[in-house]
Length: 486
Image (tube, one colour):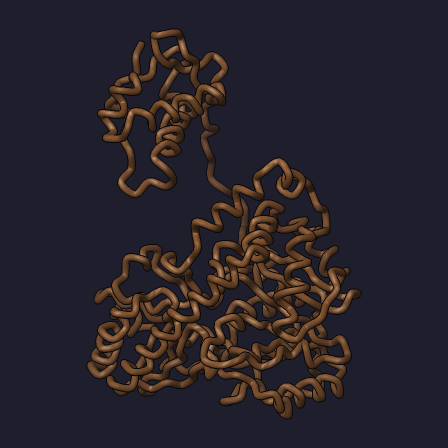
């Protein structure tokens, strides 16, 4: 029995090459039970004509499926579903009864319902996406990343792909971070003092679990990264939000019972202000007096396109009390989920053990691909390219904001990828953001960044890493018009 050619169709926005899509289409048909053992596939000529692709594309897809035992070839007769093809399971789903679990009693902790900045799934289709922290695919060096990924799949790197490192990391990636990335921040570290993490969020989680208990106090900036605040709140430690000023976290205002200080000195999140060197010195002195640890989140330091970045807090630390957190999410792409933390060896030893209990280690293939991308110079080239583009976008954004009379509450003096804005006090920017979506404009309301019940509702953030330069000014006009109409 032959399978009808009409059974096959390519999705309009299908992922992967045409050959890969055809392979997936046939494999899914077999795995789902729609195509049975012994059934004949359409000829390569007929299927190619039906799908509108070249015959060689279909032939290569058939050949790959033949090699994987999904198909078998019978002389000049054609291709058939193989006897050895995976057989779909035969079972009847068990009819579900009424659940009797009292989830209010069963859930020991609740993690949902906390502050989060949701973004529409189709934000890339927005004409004016002032969204923060998302990658601009036109700026990413996809070709060289793919080459590095292919190289990491090679026989030479087989162990890095398949081995269980248990609690260790890819030595090539660690070496690059130690010799190339950290010296740019004035930090000297041995491999034993570096741990690869699943992004900065994972690093902050590790630090909080190791340094805090229910009777210890964590100081956070206010406003601050909302996910960090939620993370600390669920651990039942004492959380002390400390209002920031134009220079960041004020050391003199730190409570006397402070145990751990979480700070973003290079680009305060979300105001983007940069802490002066003098204040960094005072912060370290105050931390020493309190015998407190400091967790430094140094996100976006690579995007200092308006001037040289200030030295990292960690580079000024002589006591070993600063835990440094870095990430490749902003400079490469957020879906990579790859970051690192640097600290004294006793701390990293505990962080390594805790990470091993939870997820062992980040995937070896991802680590080796990133190591090649960094060590072959592609990363530095991308940073230079991104910096030039972001500088132009920033200039256009600054001009448009001034022209339309919008108020900047904070802008990174060294660069970055966002502006922290304030609307008139009567404007609720959560409602503003919702209304602007109807005009294909996306902004991020600022309320989730603040602590406490009486949060200001009139702040918002404008990211410019993913919006085309020629759309910035028209988008700002729409925002200004919507604010004036309220």
